[in-house]
Length: 203
Ligand SMILES: [Zn+2]
Ligand SMILES: [Zn+2]
Ligand SMILES: [Zn+2]
Image 1 (spheres, rainbow, N blue to C red):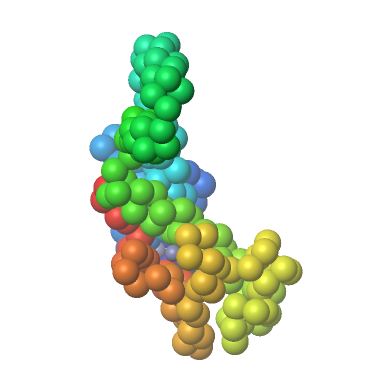
Image 2 (spheres, helix red, strand yellow):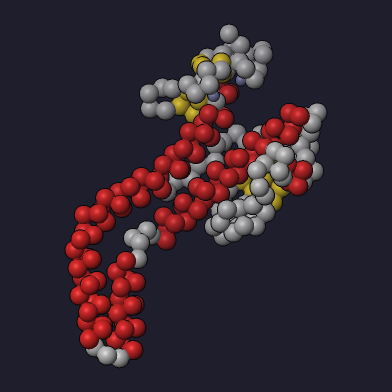
């Protein structure tokens, strides 16, 4: 059997995601069980991993909160009573501050950055798919700007979900460069059609 991308190359594995035959160059990643994945399936896997990260954390957080929910409810009632009894705005402000601190989510700034990046990468992957669809339907040409894919190939506007700033896009002829316009947060998030590595970010 020949590779799906290289007609002259003998396939050495089937993609565990889409079952396409792959040569050794086209195996993008391999998991601990020896399953091989093509570029697209490897990206999808990474993305579901990204998505799972936040959900898993939030599920654990919910459980934790449910456990001590009753106790902190009592504390808050006691505090309100105290605040009402102690007449004076100063005490009330202090109380609000304390209550806010108490109920603040325990998500760290670092986690938040990772999740924001995850969200941005997932979004960029959708833009990448839209660009691939445009390419397939327009004589193997990439659009001159992201404006051409807006609406018809990409639902909504291709902007970073975090900053709402449009992605920077450059048509390189047979390839393109797509990156997040937020260099401080997503400096490594860049995608191209010919990218050889799946964008991956460790938490
Ligand atoms: Zn595949
Ligand atoms: Zn190949
Ligand atoms: Zn972004």
